[in-house]
Amino acid sequence: MPTLYHFWSSPESQRVRLALGYKGVDYADQALAYDDDETFFELGVARQVPLLRLDDGRLLTDSTDILWRIDEFFPDGPTLVSGRIDAAAWTALLEWRVRVHHVLERLYAPIRPAYRDIGGDPAILAAYKAEVEARFGMSLEALANDRYDGYAQLRQLSRLDELARHLAQRRFYMGEISIADLLLAADLYPIQIHDGIALPIDLMYYLQRVGETCATPLSEGQLAT
Image (cartoon, rainbow, N blue to C red; front, side, top):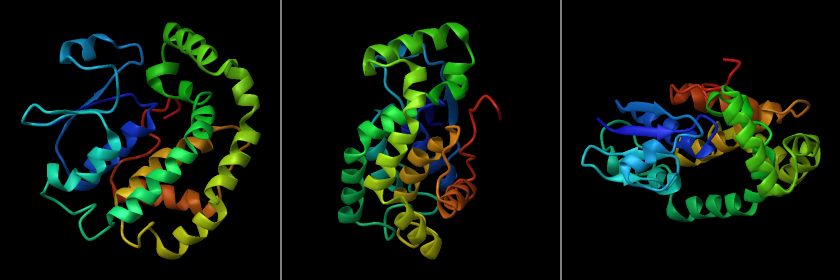
């Protein structure tokens, strides 16, 4: 049986959870604590999630490569790539993701404690706060206060309102569900955890639609759920 090692607070992990859910893959779900180094040491790999162990023993850590090859790894069940999205469209989406990476990371940082792997343990949370301050040169609280500027940048760079209208008309990014939707849904869903930030309503409906289609609730792993 394949095994997925992941952090609840990792959008990259959520991408793969959505893919496995849609494909109907029977897998072992190993949600790790954020300070878990032992598991990675035992597996002989760098500390990185998602970590997908296939039945043949291969260990995969690149979520975008896992998505692109998901039909190869798990040929049974409905397709997510073949006939759904071509290489040019996938590459364009990945280029967008690179452009907004820094903005998204600043937005993610204050909301990761809403997930059990960080916020569920005071010691882990304290260590995470120190990690964030060292990385960004700002406290978690300061980054949270900066969320409106960050979201404004994301909204402009991603043309979120136009994207929301497109998704309302076509239901999915390419018209049928594909790996593009798994990346978009996993990466945009956490933004709405911020107090005072509301994604366009059509985009919120879309996120719900993707989660339901993949039989994988995007809210799973949050402390409040």
